[in-house]
Length: 322
Ligand code: KG4
Ligand code: ZN
Image 1 (cartoon, rainbow, N blue to C red):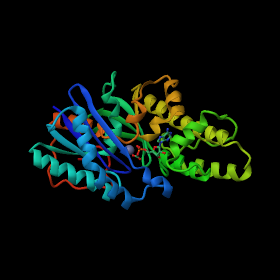
Image 2: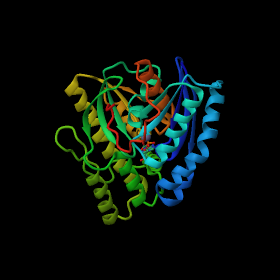
Image 3: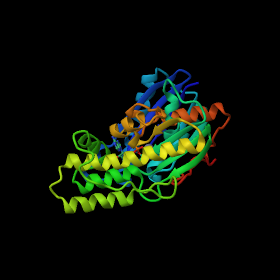
Image 4: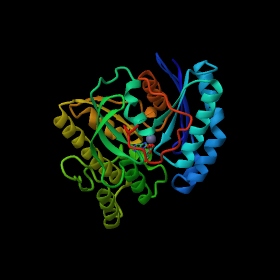
């Protein structure tokens, strides 16, 4: 069964085909237009999705060598509502036209289950750290659709912290990849920064961001490489610590990661050295893509869940809720 997935929740217009043997096509159009504005402009994102969704879907079907999928899945939230609506409405119309089932997919569930597309894939139950531009949550995944939140950020998402720190340092948007590249050439011990903790498991990144701002003001001569490396090391320490605590709490040692920040080289290295059994999707499957959406659609369809054509965008949609 080949499922066409469509993703349009932020600034990537993406389509992919996932079948029984895995990913058959994976096309991502990244909307570079937002860089000039220093962040994603929702109206521009929606228009760009409307412009690119058809060519991107055509390219995915051609890459998979099929004319018609057996089902269509699309991100229905969380995300920018206007952007989500473009992919969602297109997907519903396509499913109706082809006469195949339609499955609305939660974007976060896409990130959460990304590692299942890889070989080896983690077996349930596994811990899943989703670290993206809008979310930072450690889940216990017990099965498809069965997720327990173990820890989450009480303020900024970790990707947001990367973007804000990059902005303070005048590095442009999106900040994560630039900070990542700079950090590789810096000293992670150069600038002392806090490792904030909230209770046993929750996280907070707003204080860390403020500490970077203060350090930049106090020590304006700090090499950008050293500031980036010090910030990234603090983030990695916090995330690795929470993952280990989650493992101790649940007795589950398998950890999958997903979301844009999971593409971070420092985090990937730190988690690989953590003693946990880590499952790292390739970097291109950590940042937004449609293979993860097709994957969830396919798993849900196999479990007997089909959506209706009345499904609408859900800007805020807690993962695991029907
Ligand atoms: O999952 P994603 O592509 O979109 C959302 O669902 O939000 O995540 C985007 C976030 C941005 O904040 C971006 O700066 C961050 O992921 N990001 C990274 C890296 N690549 C993307 N953060 C750290 N290191 C990276 N290499
Ligand atoms: Zn995402």
